[in-house]
Length: 275
Ligand code: PGA
Picture (cartoon, rainbow, N blue to C red):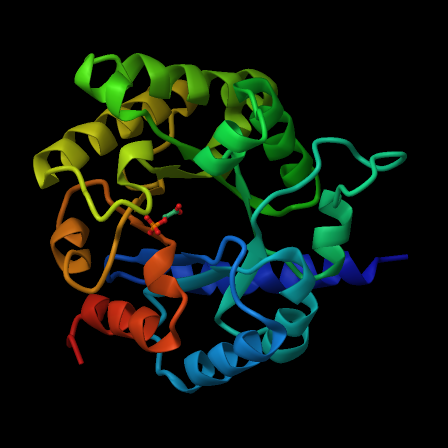
């Protein structure tokens, strides 16, 4: 018997394939709410964003805290706006108190999951290997992982960031091989997250190119098929400039995604008509 979750996954894939056949440059605009918002605020936010006319080339994804995922499932079933979880267990199931499995996220209609956000790496001891296993767990349930990678300020200043990003990507590649091409990569310099400081556009461009070339050499992914988001202090003031950088395919937005108005302004700025 075909499971409900498989049907949902097929429908989501269909919606995605419609999206990816468009000519217009596409952006993934993702909101990472971290440990913020309430149930009431979540409902209000969704109501407002649902009213917004979002063109197909702007793929909107929201990552709320786990407890609010059922609200997204209820309010956005089969909507163009998709959602996902901020984390996932690396194990399949069993005696892992407090963990949430990929199967459970699939049941909740999640299309995406964040893996390896720097806050998880730094505060919860997630090693590149753990992040890689979480990525693999998501893929087993057809949930697209957004693998977050990024260097610290010290690593950037010491000119070691290429090496650091490569180690983070290599661990994932070792675990999932060519399926790396099914992942979205979010480049988030740790020193830009929540600080209001962003790298220069040339630095973003150079680093995204580096990540893109690694992905091409690893997976043979075609020129335009890699998906690399930028994250770290993105807001209404800087999003347009960053969007113009080559190999920037979207954004992972924290602070500026907590108010529907700010988030929608970012979407509006990315519209070709700019309205
Ligand atoms: P920020 O967070 O936009 O608040 O810097 C981004 C992130 O951590 O994903």
